[in-house]
Image (cartoon, rainbow, N blue to C red; front, side):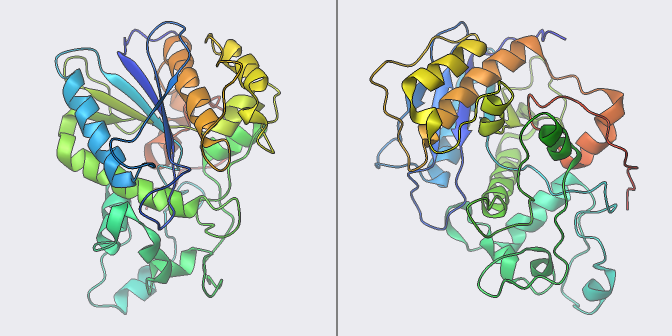
Length: 324
């Protein structure tokens, strides 16, 4: 279904959850309405972006959109952990929580999950989220260094991740914090970002699909993205930095109704991260116009607890949602 929402800009962010303050892999690209190729957004002062600088940049973009068309922002991290498979983000914690007098109850909705991650990581700079790994209760769910022992770890998947796999590309488990496919560290840092943005912007921020997009109120819409999926769904394998090749990237951009990058394009970042941000910005513009934001009832309950990757087909998975 075509969207009736007109956006003023489309920002793709290739995220990083690493502990360092500034990150070569943290890349931003901005697309405008139409078909022009997305352009890299340079950090304000330093050579590389920090997550705190991205936070400030998003606040500025939201303020600039006030009274005008909203901006659509896509960020490459999991907005939630799996929920519907076990009826909770952290199933089986009741006994452990009862043994720790100062502990809080397990989160049963997305706002509580983000708030928990931010609270556990208080004092960690630049939205770093790794304190979850050493927590006496929550740490048991994450496969992470230095001990690599997680009594409650399981290779769980959200409904949207299963749908992405069936459509050509599978994300890694959100509780996996080791290896090249570690998505947990970035996702926890991202959940802190979402929590703080919601605190600052209130109803002006719509985190899709958890929040409604309200005309005249919403200044910024945030969605979860999966840049490599945007290549794979086209039958284009972006492994081994293939996305850094301007001809390869240009062919993919054409499928998203975008002009190509220049022939002498050289992607910044250790792993062609700028190319991921560029394809994400083009895909945001394409899907916002051609797909829209209506979530079908068949997956609405799953999306309410787990979110959805923007652009992944809506597919009914044979699971029953079991709210705690």
